[in-house]
Length: 78
Image (cartoon, rainbow, N blue to C red):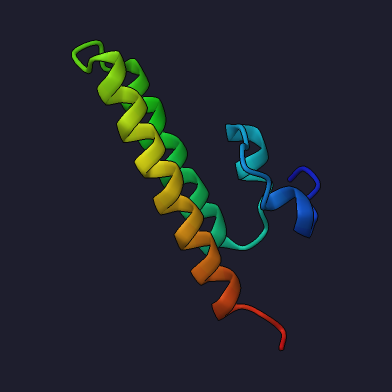
């Protein structure tokens, strides 16, 4: 397998599919992959109006951000 992303890289705001596949922890990888797939799906759905797409994307970014914060709290080394 390709080299794992470092701590900083895996928490970047935007990752592509290849980068997501390089996240070592399966739980974090699943969080990032699920949100990437959702946003890709709504992007491809031509029945969604532009304004609605923006609203849905922003809501999902926020949901992903919160899930990542919860993940970090759960896995903090403190």
